[in-house]
Amino acid sequence: MATRNVAMTVTFVAWDTSANTGKTGDASNIAVKWIKDGTVETLDTNTVTEVDATNCPGVYKVAISAAEANCNIGMLAGKSTTSDIVVLPISIQFERLPDAAPAANGGLPTVDSNNHINGVQDTLSVNVTQIEGSDATDQINAACDAAIETYGLDHLVSASVAGSDVADNSIVAKLVSKESTADWDDYVNTTDSLQAQRDYTGSGYTAIPWNSSWDAEVQSECADALTAHWGATLTESYASDGAAATPAQLLYMIYCCVGEFAISGTTITGKKLNGSDTAMTWTIDDASSPTSRTRAS
Image (cartoon, rainbow, N blue to C red; front, side):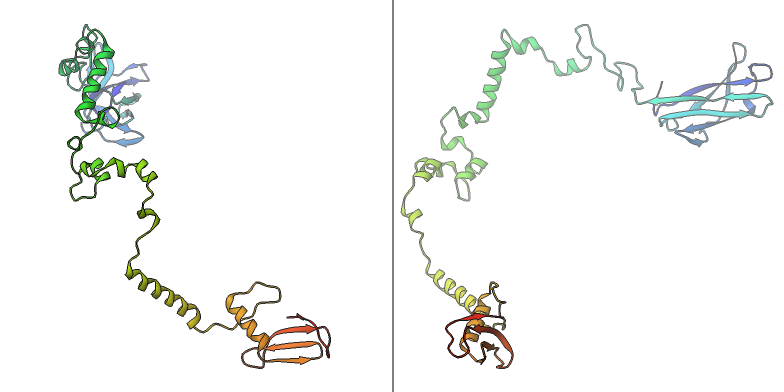
C-alpha cells in the first residue's frame, strides 16, 4: 500500500503475447498514462526505463511525483508501438500515512524499554512515582486543595470571606455592588441576603413612594384614551337580534329605542340617524293595548 502525496517509482510489465514472455528492450516504444481517481493525466516525467533485461525481463519503471500520488486510487496504463506487446496496467491504492522512518520527525512514535513514548517522555519529564508518593489519593487531593485555595474558590462554601478576598469589579463584586467600582464590602448580609429580603416587611414594600410628576402623566394618558374612544365619531352600527354587541352598537341601539320610531299594527320600527332607514323592529303583543314587545330584527 502506497503513501499518499509522496513521490514514488512504479514498476510494470510489458508482455509479449506472441512469445508469451516479458518483452525486453522496448522502453523507447512504450508510452504510459497515469489515471488519477479515474481521470487520465500525462506524467510529469514520462520517461520509461527498463529495470533489468537479464534478470527481470519485461519489467519497466516510471517516476510518479508527489502531486501525481495525491489521490485515492492511481493506475498506470499504456501501450507499445511494437506488435504483440501489451503493457499490463497496475492499480495502486494510496493511504495517508507518515512517510518518515519510525521515531524520526514526521514518523510514527516509538516507545523505549520502559514503555514510554520516545521524545514525549523526555519533554514532559514526568515521574508518576514522584507525583503519587506513598499515597496517590492524598497527593492529588492536596494538589487540588492548594489550587482551590490559590484562586479563592474555598470561600464559596468552606471558608469565611472578607472584602479583600473578592477583587473589586469581579463578577461576584458586581453582583452585590452598584458602585462604579464594584466592591464586595457594599454587601450587608443582614439586609441584602435572600433570607433578609424574604423577611423584610418595611415601608419600602408596603408603600411605594409616589412621584408628583406621575400624576400629570397618568391624567394625560387617561385624557388621551377618553378622547380616542369618546371624542371621536362612532360609526353607526346595530347588532343583530340575539348577537353580542360592541359598546358603540349598544349606544346606537339605546338611542334607537328612545328616538324616532313608527308603529304599524303590532310592529314598531326604529329609525336610523337619518330618520328614514330602519335600524331595528319590534313586535308588540296587542295593536291597541300592548303590554310587551319583542325584538323582531
